[in-house]
Amino acid sequence: MIPALCCATLAAQSGAAAAADAPGVADTESAIGYSYTLPPDWVVIRAAPAPHPAPGSSPLLPKKGTACTDVAETARHGEPASVIVIVDLPFKCFGETMTADDLAGFGSGAADGIKQDFDLMDAVPATYTLGSHPFWIERAKGNPKGRAQPQYTVEIACSLLKNGAVCWMVMAADEASLRVFEQTPVALDGEAATPLVPESAFSEPPAGN
View 1 (cartoon, rainbow, N blue to C red):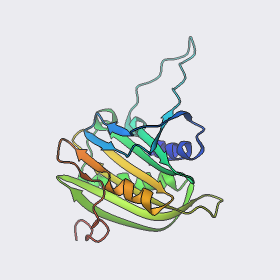
View 2 (cartoon, one colour; view 1 turned 180 degrees about the vertical axis):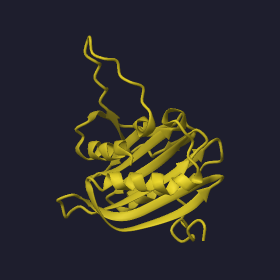
View 3 (cartoon, rainbow, N blue to C red; view 1 turned 90 degrees about the horizontal axis):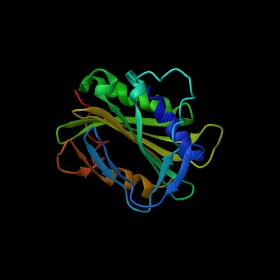
């Protein structure tokens, strides 16, 4: 499971963990090797800074394993808000390098995190490739727990890079936001930029078939 993804979703919905909303280009250049730039009308949610340890307290232990998961960017648009969250997991911090055999489990863990806060229905998984990079994707309908409206399209696309794993997630309140999420170009490990989700993603046969 990727608990940071769940937490980022809640922060994006409520704004409780946001220090400020920063208008302008949501431009993510990640140290693990990808770039993804949203249109300028998406508002970046800046996370509140972590509190400093109290004087005399024990020093924080280095992160390892899934604790290395980092929310690279959270952005929202419209009302009711559509929200995009990007989550990184650097292999150097994680302690091992994932392979294509691990990708479905990594993506499923992200989806399980969302289920803590959303009731998801009619989930459809698929796989595709961008350049040399395998992707696992899942699309579902969903509502925040305890609420019948509004209904969102929840989509998660995850991939493996040379230096880490990454998931892009959208809670799309409308078709336009879903298209932005899917059609925004992503560049992976220096390869040519292409839309994050190809139109054929859910019509391709699953990997291995």
